[in-house]
Each structure stands twice: as structure tokens, then as C-alpha cells.
Image (tube, rainbow, N blue to C red):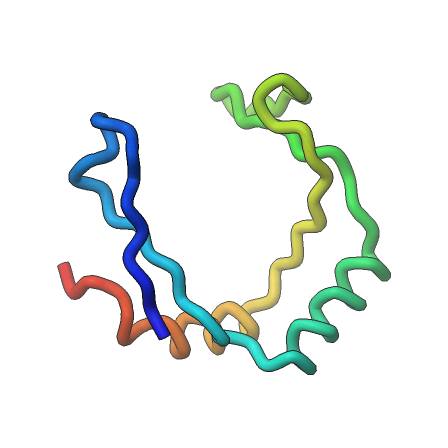
Amino acid sequence: MKRDVHLPNFEDQNKLAFLIFNIFTPDECQQWIELSEQRGYSPATVNIGGGMLQLMTDFRNSDRCMIDDVAMARTLFQRIESFLPQT
């Protein structure tokens, strides 16, 4: 199921935003949670250009776990592709 999201800021008026529900099954969600907890989290940095990253907690104050998985990316794209604009 897809639901459009209204973006309140004027500069975002012509931007696309929506939510898609139930892309992953509860079991798949649990598997991703467990994998992320096994790998661990680190502070989320900000790309400041020139290949440099900086910790800026006033802008982004969270931890993250980055997982590069081609098969999962392919599965995710296949599940959401029909919701994406064709342009």
C-alpha cells in the first residue's frame, strides 16, 4: 500500500514523497534487525565534500549500520519498482 506525503516547506512543493507499507515481512524485518545488531552501529557522519566525512551531531545525531547487500537491494527494488515514477 502506498500513501502520498505532503511536504510542508515551500521549497519542497514539487518534490516527490510517499510511504510504502509492508515491503518486508515481519520475519525479514527481524532478520535485518539481528544482522544490524551483529555488525554493530557507529555514529552517522555527514559528507562535507572532497571525500571527507565529519561528525556533526547538531545536524545528524544518530548511529547507523551500513550493510551493502546486492541481493537484498535487488529484492527491495523489485518490490517497490511499481510505485516509482517512470521518468
